Image (cartoon, rainbow, N blue to C red; front, side, top):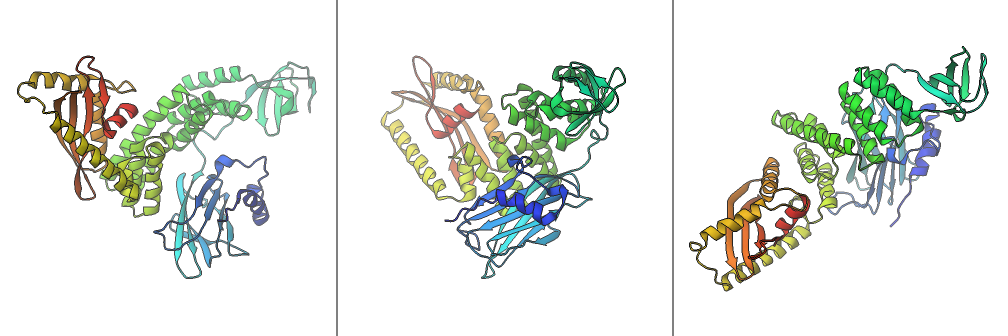
Length: 486
């Protein structure tokens, strides 16, 4: 199988084809995080069979009117490749060998800020086709971008300026930055200074930024936080406060963008994690409301924002996949559902949606476990439920009040799981708590059934309670997942 590394080619071709500074990238400028990349063989259900397909888009964040680059590298020769932008503009890709295809596409100048899609359509020699979808963001001017503000610097060495001179350690006011700073000293001296010759007092800028934020001078705060990121791009605090500032001016795209930056720099950042969780829940609720209002495209954007902020959330990915399916994009739906398997490889709902053989396997295994458990219960000849009704209630209460490994009360965790599953449109039939006395202790079960692919199947949560210590142990997969993940 031929695997093609296309990113180096992408950069060189971008320069050759455009002849434009707007896309002239050097290896120093190239940001691997800015690439949208899909690779792998075509699936058995796809119309066209190709051993390996790579689809690349760069950059994934582009200003309106600026160019972006699309490249497709294949292990087989094909007839043609076209890129469809947001389902209204189609551009043909070029190739010399019918295996490696590329094109430079200018983003529409009047395009709205936010998420956009390129659908790459590959047609084989036999007329059969296969598609790959790439998502990117168009970023325009934000209300908080319009004006730049000066910020303090200090010189590292004696410096002669266009007008006058300054000594090492002199405090100056920076008015403009490129590779150099245009600075102005208190003695009236001003001119260009190389960036390597100045020292940026981050603490002073942070104080100025925070004071501007408190005074609701949000444009000014944005400028200060950006200056910190110019010299310390991994500063999670600056990215977090920049996100908070954009949130105050109502720029949702910039808020999410800088929150993602903060978490990439420091995944444990307390403030960024709290804010990301809060915003993700808001987007998730917004998506559900928009779905009920029959606005599927707007709902899709909301769910995309939710998963970008909380990429480990199973419920968000499931809901995003369902929304893609409602819009008729089965490929994108399956891509979203597959993300769940990175978090929970045994997730039966996803295996059912993807119709994998593994789903049948785990269903059969759980059925065998259920039959063995039932056989043991019958063999143990439990006492009459009437005689043990008080004890049964006590042990059910022990389970309900116990806590998961993450500190959540079990009864609350169960309610959350059931509510989340129902919100996805799945029918759940709840029968409630039941318990059985066995020689090994009380088996306490939350009995419920779920409708899946037209069939009603048991989805019980089984726990064992030790008669002496009253320790609660999960006894089946559902109970174990609940105890470990909630």
